[in-house]
Length: 377
Ligand code: 13P
Ligand code: SF4
Image 1 (cartoon, rainbow, N blue to C red):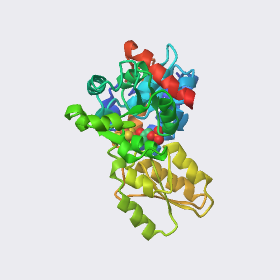
Image 2 (cartoon, protein in one colour; image 1 turned 90 degrees about the vertical axis):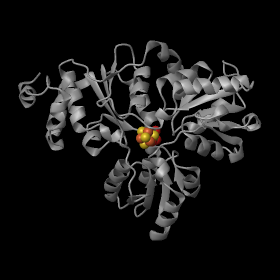
Image 3 (cartoon, helix red, strand yellow; image 1 turned 90 degrees about the horizontal axis):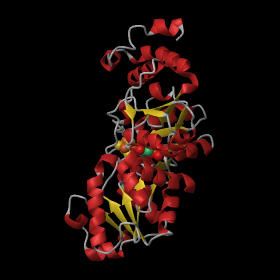
Image 4 (cartoon, rainbow, N blue to C red; image 1 turned 60 degrees about the vertical axis):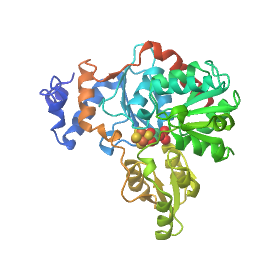
């Protein structure tokens, strides 16, 4: 360790996280940069687009869930520090090579949508579908398809039954893959992404049913389950579900000519009114590719919208949020510069904190499900 680095943080490495949390944000910058330098190629920092500026500026790679999963699978760094949420770090651990360790700087950074599908509920749903002869335990009848925003256990469940994982950037390709094998899909856990994807492929809304895990037989009649092409799990993102069709109408009245672009976790009614739909990476690209003078109202998490507002202003483009009350992902927000500094400084001492480790028995099939996703691109 260099003496300067040692001097900067001589008080802290052995200190608990609590000692970091009382320090102001701006005092973290030099320390994070120093720890990052010291770790060199031993560590890679991955940052999701929803991370705060104070954190994402230290990311070696930033991206949407798909791009970050690819980066995690390709890096040779011993430590993968994931500035994102729990399901992303789990996926990185599944894709990591032997000996690599994945760190989530704050273990409380979860995802409320992923929490809406619990493996026991999914198993019970599948048993009920088997009892109706709609599928067997190998997925002959229904292809289980899970959004990346789910636990490793659910990814494994899908992999074992001939299914796969998708993100918001490849959901359509995953649907095609799934339909090439079966007439029906069970889509977990985001009903909105599932409905938006199915509808864009020409599947009418009546052929999508919603399975409520808290109701007998999901609250769906046998006839409807038999005729459905897509069984949607009753889950949603509490951040994106806040965007409403009236927000689109209002912003168009206030700013004539503005383009509305939204994340596919938004409600179907909102997506139908939008000019464009895409993953976080795709939303950025849509604006980057637009000519100078373009105006966009974006339906996604507020940190990304604000960052695009600042960055694209330099190119003469206007970017505002679709809903002025601002949609914050509180769990993404949990990764603070203090947490990142604590995690990195500990790593400089070879002390791994907040490691995310997917149990071996879950790894095999979840890896199969993730590999199928990476293969379809
Ligand atoms: P992206 O894959 O589009 O980045 O989405 C992740 C997410 O959690 C959006 O809420
Ligand atoms: Fe989960 Fe929604 Fe946050 Fe994305 S924005 S991490 S889906 S709670």
